[in-house]
Image (cartoon, rainbow, N blue to C red):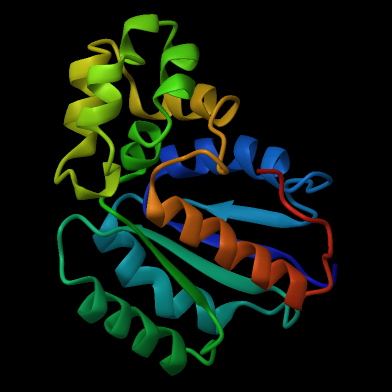
Length: 197
């Protein structure tokens, strides 16, 4: 693999999740060698520093992925705005992935993993599987996870979820699009290993 994939993230919880999850999904990946996660303190911080970071980056073989919550905005308009920033910074090939709606949507998409990770078996019930059949449609999935697991802590539990979440059986479409986009990018960079399912 030539260069690294640099993930520009909205928040530290996504960093906590991806640093443990990516090496599970893409066997052989090593943090710092194959990928690097750079968290920000929310959307405003990411948006403000995006152009500066992309323009100032001095390793030409590194490629970028922006990972940002959609948070019920117009995703086409948001993607167009981010794409314009990337092009203006000289990085038009940046991959933009919007999570519908938050990281917790991915958790709701895999209730067995959520139940195992948080050690609350009653999360994975037939009623909940039906309720969260379309996890990307929930406006505030973090509130739903908190309802299922009142002691849920965003960053701490992101690390735990990374050990359990399975992309192949996840019901979140945005997670599947994220994995597919990263896989294609890794292939373009010469990293041929297939992700797990």
